[in-house]
Image (cartoon, rainbow, N blue to C red; front, side, top):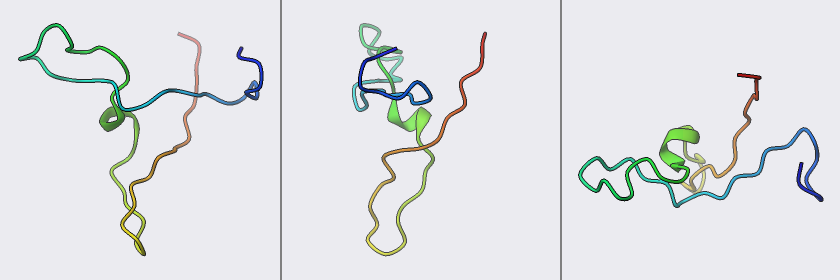
Length: 59
């Protein structure tokens, strides 16, 4: 648990993950936004959605 973040909240740095098999040193490293965020845009301005709800379950 991180101080300052609510216990029911997940925070994740985005934009550094890659799914690139042709570049093995960086393939599957980090968190890929394309795998976590839905492919949707705001209808008025076309902005990309930068937050989404998740459900965390025990493995």
